[in-house]
Length: 405
Ligand SMILES: Cc1cc2nc3c(=O)[nH]c(=O)nc-3n(C[C@H](O)[C@H](O)[C@H](O)COP(=O)(O)OP(=O)(O)OC[C@H]3O[C@@H](n4cnc5c(N)ncnc54)[C@H](O)[C@@H]3O)c2cc1C
Image (cartoon, rainbow, N blue to C red):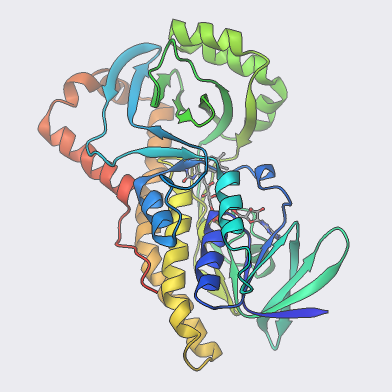
């Protein structure tokens, strides 16, 4: 049995769910396929920059008014080897990084679309192959615990993340910007005796650093940078060992807090950090977007924002396409236009993401001197200007993106 749609979107992460929601609300019959039956089983980032906040608001999901757990991070306390260096306040009022429960956000997007016959969500359905006719993909083969069927569609989008089945099935060529770090992530109860509410904590430690944002649910998320490839070994060591290692290099008050947290840590995940980009984002009738087209590293909390902005640009191009005469050649040129519009931002952000991890991990003497002198350096106007420029890029994006359809 094959079902027929205008658009099939593989993957209901933030990008896929947002795109399907826009298209369906514009009268386009859309199928959204998600392998997980429970969103919380898929580990993804939670940091939403102002650009991601604006993108969600544009689509109709204002994090300030919908019922989704959010924690604002409005300042960063910076330490070096456990010693306090500087507190960084946001340069603009709206320069807030929100930590947002992704499973709650995705459930919210799905439930908002209940009752719209154009929004067809297949929860717990894995795409395992493509339907090919005359060398062009015309749909997806889908399986769940009970059945297998085909989803045919004029437009097939792969928003299926860093392990994209569509990327693999169609042998998309990629550039891999080799990374030297992996990250151990976990959450602990928020250390109120150490940090004021809504503060992120950064600590440069020998051979690396830790980045710890305030998280909804009165928690602190700890991101502990480890050597690339050592994640299996670190995973085996287990949480008590992670905490003990971190205690050796963090401020005494946080160390005491972590001692009490042993046995209470949640949301453990060891991330194999990668920055990759497909050389072309479309092939044989399939367009890849989000992490499937360009895997982002967690540096600067960019992946969700970029995926949401991909969704908006894709919708801007695809919605008008359905009101005109349809042809494969026209669709291919639309795919190319979407890629061309998104590529400059993705390239620039990925280029930026390549640097800090390497620089702060290697910690050559010059870099250490600069880190230790941050309180003085950040008083110099040219240094402030430089930091502000990078900050603006990470917070607000590189190009103008707004929903136009
Ligand atoms: C540990 C970690 C921390 C991160 N921190 C941040 C952060 O703070 N801020 C930030 O912006 N980004 C962060 N990122 C990156 C961010 O999570 C991703 O860039 C973002 O989620 C990409 O969105 P997406 O919609 O493209 O794909 P994803 O969110 O990866 O969603 C892809 C979806 O496709 C589904 N899928 C995959 N294969 C199939 C299949 N065969 N059939 C059906 N469905 C399928 C998956 O189950 C998944 O739900 C982090 C990532 C990780 C892993």
